[in-house]
Length: 283
Image (cartoon, rainbow, N blue to C red; front, side, top):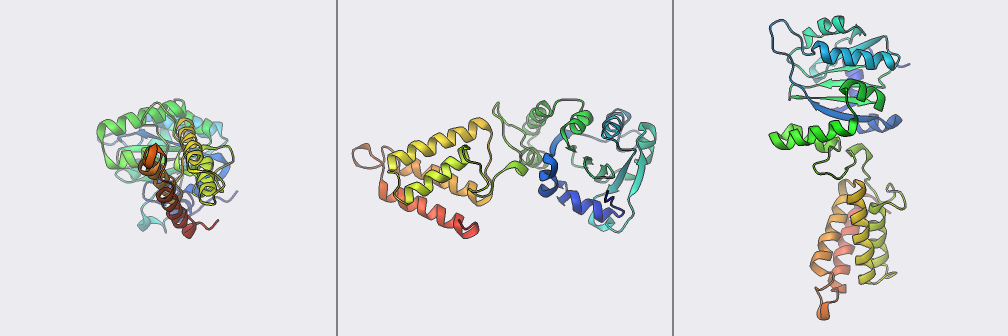
Protein backbone atom coordinates (compact mmCIF):
# COMPACT_ATOMS: atom_id res chain seq x y z
CA UNK A 1 0.00 0.00 0.00
CA UNK A 2 1.46 3.33 -1.11
CA UNK A 3 0.43 5.57 1.78
CA UNK A 4 1.12 9.28 1.18
CA UNK A 5 3.28 10.99 3.80
CA UNK A 6 3.15 14.65 2.77
CA UNK A 7 0.15 16.83 2.08
CA UNK A 8 1.19 17.41 -1.52
CA UNK A 9 1.43 13.67 -2.17
CA UNK A 10 -2.20 13.13 -1.20
CA UNK A 11 -3.67 16.29 -2.71
CA UNK A 12 -1.98 15.78 -6.09
CA UNK A 13 -3.24 12.19 -6.22
CA UNK A 14 -6.92 12.97 -5.67
CA UNK A 15 -7.45 16.62 -6.69
CA UNK A 16 -6.87 18.33 -10.02
CA UNK A 17 -7.52 21.81 -8.66
CA UNK A 18 -9.11 23.64 -5.72
CA UNK A 19 -12.27 21.79 -4.64
CA UNK A 20 -12.11 19.60 -7.77
CA UNK A 21 -11.53 15.84 -7.69
CA UNK A 22 -9.13 14.23 -10.15
CA UNK A 23 -10.81 12.51 -13.10
CA UNK A 24 -8.00 9.94 -13.22
CA UNK A 25 -8.51 9.02 -9.56
CA UNK A 26 -12.28 8.78 -10.00
CA UNK A 27 -11.99 6.55 -13.06
CA UNK A 28 -9.87 4.03 -11.16
CA UNK A 29 -11.92 1.24 -9.54
CA UNK A 30 -15.12 2.84 -10.90
CA UNK A 31 -15.35 5.28 -8.00
CA UNK A 32 -18.28 7.60 -7.50
CA UNK A 33 -18.54 11.04 -5.91
CA UNK A 34 -21.56 12.72 -4.39
CA UNK A 35 -21.67 16.32 -3.12
CA UNK A 36 -23.72 17.45 -0.14
CA UNK A 37 -24.48 20.77 1.48
CA UNK A 38 -22.31 21.29 4.52
CA UNK A 39 -21.77 24.21 6.84
CA UNK A 40 -19.20 23.67 9.57
CA UNK A 41 -20.43 24.01 13.16
CA UNK A 42 -20.10 27.60 14.37
CA UNK A 43 -20.28 27.13 18.14
CA UNK A 44 -17.16 28.26 20.04
CA UNK A 45 -14.63 25.49 20.41
CA UNK A 46 -16.27 23.27 17.82
CA UNK A 47 -14.25 21.89 14.93
CA UNK A 48 -15.26 21.76 11.26
CA UNK A 49 -16.85 18.29 11.54
CA UNK A 50 -19.69 17.55 13.94
CA UNK A 51 -20.29 14.31 15.80
CA UNK A 52 -23.05 13.12 13.43
CA UNK A 53 -20.95 13.32 10.27
CA UNK A 54 -17.89 12.01 12.11
CA UNK A 55 -19.84 8.98 13.28
CA UNK A 56 -21.00 8.10 9.76
CA UNK A 57 -17.51 8.63 8.36
CA UNK A 58 -15.91 6.42 11.00
CA UNK A 59 -18.46 3.65 10.43
CA UNK A 60 -17.93 3.79 6.64
CA UNK A 61 -14.14 3.79 6.99
CA UNK A 62 -14.16 0.87 9.40
CA UNK A 63 -16.45 -1.06 7.09
CA UNK A 64 -13.85 -0.50 4.37
CA UNK A 65 -11.12 -1.86 6.66
CA UNK A 66 -9.43 1.42 7.65
CA UNK A 67 -8.00 1.72 11.16
CA UNK A 68 -7.15 5.41 10.77
CA UNK A 69 -7.77 8.32 8.43
CA UNK A 70 -5.32 10.74 6.83
CA UNK A 71 -6.13 14.43 7.23
CA UNK A 72 -4.58 17.39 5.42
CA UNK A 73 -5.37 20.85 4.14
CA UNK A 74 -5.63 21.23 0.36
CA UNK A 75 -3.96 24.65 0.03
CA UNK A 76 -0.87 24.42 -2.22
CA UNK A 77 1.07 26.41 0.35
CA UNK A 78 0.74 23.45 2.73
CA UNK A 79 2.05 20.76 0.36
CA UNK A 80 5.29 20.30 2.28
CA UNK A 81 3.53 19.62 5.59
CA UNK A 82 3.24 16.10 7.00
CA UNK A 83 -0.16 14.45 6.89
CA UNK A 84 -2.04 14.00 10.17
CA UNK A 85 -3.17 10.45 11.00
CA UNK A 86 -6.37 10.27 13.06
CA UNK A 87 -7.98 7.14 14.56
CA UNK A 88 -11.33 5.88 13.33
CA UNK A 89 -13.08 6.93 16.54
CA UNK A 90 -15.72 9.66 16.27
CA UNK A 91 -14.80 11.66 19.39
CA UNK A 92 -11.07 11.65 18.58
CA UNK A 93 -11.79 12.55 14.97
CA UNK A 94 -13.90 15.55 15.96
CA UNK A 95 -11.19 16.71 18.37
CA UNK A 96 -8.30 16.14 15.96
CA UNK A 97 -9.95 18.15 13.18
CA UNK A 98 -10.34 21.35 15.21
CA UNK A 99 -7.06 22.67 13.82
CA UNK A 100 -8.51 22.44 10.30
CA UNK A 101 -11.29 24.96 10.96
CA UNK A 102 -11.69 27.64 8.29
CA UNK A 103 -9.85 25.72 5.55
CA UNK A 104 -10.60 23.19 2.83
CA UNK A 105 -9.33 19.78 3.90
CA UNK A 106 -9.30 16.10 2.97
CA UNK A 107 -9.90 12.98 5.01
CA UNK A 108 -8.77 9.82 3.22
CA UNK A 109 -8.12 6.18 3.96
CA UNK A 110 -4.41 5.26 4.02
CA UNK A 111 -4.85 3.35 0.74
CA UNK A 112 -6.61 6.45 -0.71
CA UNK A 113 -9.49 4.31 -1.96
CA UNK A 114 -12.10 6.54 -0.32
CA UNK A 115 -12.16 10.13 0.89
CA UNK A 116 -14.17 13.03 2.20
CA UNK A 117 -13.51 16.58 0.99
CA UNK A 118 -14.80 19.42 3.20
CA UNK A 119 -14.77 22.92 1.71
CA UNK A 120 -15.36 26.44 2.93
CA UNK A 121 -17.76 27.00 0.00
CA UNK A 122 -20.70 25.37 1.77
CA UNK A 123 -20.39 21.83 0.48
CA UNK A 124 -18.53 18.57 0.96
CA UNK A 125 -17.94 15.61 -1.35
CA UNK A 126 -17.89 11.95 -0.35
CA UNK A 127 -15.96 9.95 -2.94
CA UNK A 128 -14.80 6.39 -3.47
CA UNK A 129 -16.57 3.07 -3.78
CA UNK A 130 -20.35 3.29 -3.50
CA UNK A 131 -20.80 1.55 -0.08
CA UNK A 132 -18.37 4.02 1.52
CA UNK A 133 -20.00 7.04 -0.12
CA UNK A 134 -23.51 6.02 0.85
CA UNK A 135 -22.33 5.19 4.36
CA UNK A 136 -20.92 8.70 4.80
CA UNK A 137 -24.04 10.31 3.33
CA UNK A 138 -26.48 8.08 5.17
CA UNK A 139 -28.48 7.99 1.94
CA UNK A 140 -28.53 6.45 -1.52
CA UNK A 141 -26.16 8.18 -3.93
CA UNK A 142 -28.79 8.90 -6.59
CA UNK A 143 -31.18 10.51 -4.13
CA UNK A 144 -28.39 12.59 -2.61
CA UNK A 145 -27.42 13.87 -6.05
CA UNK A 146 -30.99 14.94 -6.77
CA UNK A 147 -31.21 16.76 -3.44
CA UNK A 148 -27.95 18.59 -4.08
CA UNK A 149 -29.04 19.62 -7.59
CA UNK A 150 -32.30 21.03 -6.23
CA UNK A 151 -30.44 22.98 -3.54
CA UNK A 152 -27.87 24.29 -6.03
CA UNK A 153 -30.64 25.55 -8.33
CA UNK A 154 -32.51 27.17 -5.45
CA UNK A 155 -29.43 28.98 -4.19
CA UNK A 156 -28.06 29.73 -7.69
CA UNK A 157 -24.52 29.86 -6.32
CA UNK A 158 -21.68 29.33 -8.81
CA UNK A 159 -19.57 26.86 -6.78
CA UNK A 160 -22.58 24.69 -5.95
CA UNK A 161 -23.81 24.61 -9.55
CA UNK A 162 -20.32 23.79 -10.84
CA UNK A 163 -19.86 20.84 -8.49
CA UNK A 164 -23.38 19.62 -9.29
CA UNK A 165 -22.56 19.55 -13.01
CA UNK A 166 -19.20 17.86 -12.37
CA UNK A 167 -20.78 15.12 -10.24
CA UNK A 168 -23.69 14.50 -12.61
CA UNK A 169 -26.39 15.75 -10.28
CA UNK A 170 -29.58 15.76 -12.38
CA UNK A 171 -31.38 19.07 -12.77
CA UNK A 172 -34.50 17.32 -14.05
CA UNK A 173 -36.06 13.88 -13.67
CA UNK A 174 -33.67 12.47 -16.28
CA UNK A 175 -30.32 10.93 -15.26
CA UNK A 176 -27.01 12.53 -16.24
CA UNK A 177 -23.56 10.95 -16.13
CA UNK A 178 -20.83 12.63 -14.04
CA UNK A 179 -17.87 14.20 -15.80
CA UNK A 180 -15.48 11.30 -15.15
CA UNK A 181 -17.86 9.01 -17.09
CA UNK A 182 -18.15 11.40 -20.03
CA UNK A 183 -16.73 10.54 -23.45
CA UNK A 184 -14.25 12.94 -25.05
CA UNK A 185 -13.85 11.16 -28.40
CA UNK A 186 -16.14 9.07 -30.64
CA UNK A 187 -13.89 6.06 -30.01
CA UNK A 188 -14.51 6.28 -26.24
CA UNK A 189 -18.28 6.11 -26.73
CA UNK A 190 -19.27 2.42 -26.90
CA UNK A 191 -21.16 1.03 -29.91
CA UNK A 192 -24.86 1.16 -29.23
CA UNK A 193 -24.68 4.39 -27.26
CA UNK A 194 -26.54 7.49 -28.40
CA UNK A 195 -23.35 9.55 -28.53
CA UNK A 196 -21.64 6.98 -30.77
CA UNK A 197 -24.71 6.82 -33.02
CA UNK A 198 -24.62 10.59 -33.56
CA UNK A 199 -20.89 10.61 -34.36
CA UNK A 200 -21.20 7.62 -36.71
CA UNK A 201 -24.12 9.27 -38.54
CA UNK A 202 -22.05 12.41 -39.07
CA UNK A 203 -19.18 10.40 -40.61
CA UNK A 204 -21.52 8.38 -42.81
CA UNK A 205 -23.20 11.52 -44.10
CA UNK A 206 -20.02 13.35 -45.16
CA UNK A 207 -18.68 10.21 -46.87
CA UNK A 208 -21.97 9.94 -48.81
CA UNK A 209 -22.83 6.58 -47.28
CA UNK A 210 -26.24 7.93 -46.26
CA UNK A 211 -28.46 10.71 -47.57
CA UNK A 212 -29.42 13.81 -45.60
CA UNK A 213 -32.84 12.49 -44.59
CA UNK A 214 -31.33 9.26 -43.22
CA UNK A 215 -28.62 11.24 -41.43
CA UNK A 216 -31.28 13.36 -39.77
CA UNK A 217 -33.23 10.29 -38.65
CA UNK A 218 -30.19 8.48 -37.23
CA UNK A 219 -28.66 11.54 -35.59
CA UNK A 220 -31.85 12.65 -33.84
CA UNK A 221 -32.53 9.09 -32.64
CA UNK A 222 -29.04 9.05 -31.12
CA UNK A 223 -29.66 12.46 -29.56
CA UNK A 224 -32.86 11.23 -27.91
CA UNK A 225 -31.06 8.14 -26.60
CA UNK A 226 -28.25 10.28 -25.17
CA UNK A 227 -30.74 12.39 -23.24
CA UNK A 228 -32.97 9.54 -22.07
CA UNK A 229 -30.05 7.39 -20.83
CA UNK A 230 -28.11 10.21 -19.22
CA UNK A 231 -25.11 9.82 -21.53
CA UNK A 232 -22.55 12.62 -21.58
CA UNK A 233 -20.06 13.84 -24.15
CA UNK A 234 -17.45 16.42 -23.23
CA UNK A 235 -15.01 18.85 -24.83
CA UNK A 236 -14.69 19.04 -28.63
CA UNK A 237 -16.91 15.97 -29.09
CA UNK A 238 -19.79 17.64 -27.26
CA UNK A 239 -19.21 20.80 -29.32
CA UNK A 240 -19.27 18.82 -32.59
CA UNK A 241 -22.52 17.09 -31.68
CA UNK A 242 -24.10 20.41 -30.70
CA UNK A 243 -23.02 21.98 -34.01
CA UNK A 244 -24.57 19.06 -35.90
CA UNK A 245 -27.82 19.37 -33.96
CA UNK A 246 -28.16 23.10 -34.59
CA UNK A 247 -27.15 22.61 -38.23
CA UNK A 248 -30.04 20.18 -38.60
CA UNK A 249 -32.33 22.78 -37.05
CA UNK A 250 -31.18 25.31 -39.64
CA UNK A 251 -30.67 23.10 -42.71
CA UNK A 252 -32.65 19.90 -42.01
CA UNK A 253 -36.19 18.93 -43.00
CA UNK A 254 -38.18 21.87 -44.25
CA UNK A 255 -35.14 24.10 -44.79
CA UNK A 256 -34.62 23.45 -48.51
CA UNK A 257 -36.90 23.59 -51.56
CA UNK A 258 -40.06 21.47 -51.39
CA UNK A 259 -39.56 20.87 -47.66
CA UNK A 260 -36.42 18.76 -48.16
CA UNK A 261 -33.13 19.21 -46.27
CA UNK A 262 -30.60 21.68 -47.68
CA UNK A 263 -28.00 18.98 -48.43
CA UNK A 264 -25.18 21.29 -49.50
CA UNK A 265 -25.33 23.61 -46.47
CA UNK A 266 -25.84 20.69 -44.10
CA UNK A 267 -22.89 18.79 -45.56
CA UNK A 268 -20.63 21.85 -45.22
CA UNK A 269 -21.65 22.42 -41.59
CA UNK A 270 -21.10 18.78 -40.58
CA UNK A 271 -17.72 18.70 -42.34
CA UNK A 272 -16.57 21.78 -40.47
CA UNK A 273 -17.67 20.27 -37.15
CA UNK A 274 -15.77 17.04 -37.86
CA UNK A 275 -12.68 18.93 -39.03
CA UNK A 276 -12.55 20.82 -35.73
CA UNK A 277 -13.02 17.58 -33.81
CA UNK A 278 -10.32 15.77 -35.82
CA UNK A 279 -7.88 18.62 -35.29
CA UNK A 280 -8.00 17.85 -31.56
CA UNK A 281 -8.70 14.10 -31.69
CA UNK A 282 -7.57 12.63 -35.05
CA UNK A 283 -9.68 9.71 -36.21
